[in-house]
Image (cartoon, rainbow, N blue to C red; front, side):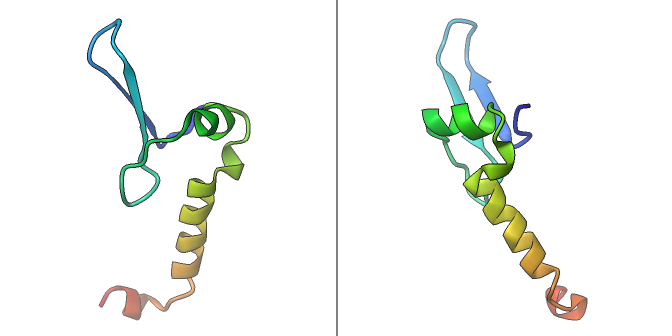
Length: 70
C-alpha cells in the first residue's frame, strides 16, 4: 500500500524521479529508507511524519470550536 501523501514527479520517461511527502505543512523529501519502510512499504502506520500529523489533529480536537475559529 502506497501512502496517499507521497507525490512523484518525473520530467521524462527516462529521467530521475523526485518523490516528496505532503503530509506535513512543508514539502519533505523522504530518504530511501523511509520510502522503502513507510511510503511504499507495509509499515505505513509507523511513519513518523504521519504519526505527528495525527497527534496534532487529535490535540486540536480537544480545543473548543469557538477558540479554533478565532
